[in-house]
Length: 586
Image (cartoon, rainbow, N blue to C red; front, side):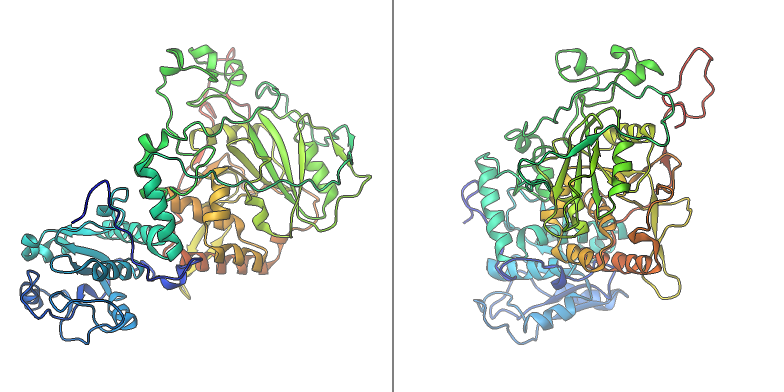
């Protein structure tokens, strides 16, 4: 008998010891498969409460295809009782049917758990939605909500089964499949996943925080004792005269403030939405926000309301960040490879940029910078990180030098005005869980050959914002490095391409939201810069392949479309002559 609060039902160890498991799983699409539901089982010797007679009556009463097999060879290598519905054949023969089934029946009456566990594992892996008939404690049910990934009905409602399953629409079918794949990958897919999940469930029961996520050491490219030469920034194109905010000394974002309370307020999301109860992160893009009146009633630490709370435009707006969260700054992460002068020009343009905490330059070249190279003094620290190897994945490493939640990822040849950067930062502060940036792209259907095409044409619908000029939360750098399947990072290294597409896939997969494009800016390359990796046709061909490969790894295409962009509130609004807009040109 299961003892709640004492026992834990764990998954059955059917997968590999660890590592990537995506290649074992089936695509979630199409939503509806050949068979509405299927069941394969060796008939028990004695009578069972779960009887196929009712199910067989559907065969003649509906046009839906149903697969029922009770005269098969029993499975070997698994302890089974002759008084229960046993497994049929081997994993390959069962998989052949499950891959063609929308639903997979799993009787929970008169059946021992190992058999139920195997049926559940195989159904989730092959994107056949489990239908649990009867009452049983499912793996990790104390923390995992199985109703989002499986249909559970009592034995008394078996005559209604066809009606219930037939009534589920395509959107709910895909939601069930996606959540099922999600739970299988995170908690059941390998021996390592089962061990990690069991320990996490025990920690959760005792309200103990998991170990902290690991930052990547930011080893300086300069040798110990070497002080790089500095010079005054030379700015070719002066910024328009406009007050964008106060210039303040750098300060980090507060970290690890919810070590114990996150289990109380967002424990459900941690297990069932984010799927990451294994690590404790400094901050999350999903952290709750205070009501708007709380900042004036005792909880105002760090807030900078516009006009002291009275609101306003122009000067009042520029003097304060406002918004729904306390004051903060952002870190610029800039990837570069042997384009010193381009890099120096880009750094120079950052001089005097409000809310900038520091610049982290990822030096991807094996050759160190020239010792006589003069670095512009832009008023904030410039930390030049030595990359262990030349990889575009280095753009999204969670460097310990990044001390802010907001990360502006930019190419070394991206040319953005200060007002564009500050506006993008303000928008990101309200959309912290999304990619917020400037160059928009979309995935288009290949009408000739099928699959997806990467498209950079002007369009009224977007699904990606390139991280050559985009804000993301630092949390996603942890997920990209430690959570994303290794096969995706390997593909990025193989093509030396597509890391921005991978980040868009990741964020849309976690949030089920599209990115946010800001301003009318479509391109952002600086004039006269040396040719970059993205200029030749091979670059685009590789990006077509990346989108299709990433969809295969995820089991579906998580990218979502958006049909709007963000501009400041008073943009193109007629205002009195004695008033100022939020921004002059945005």
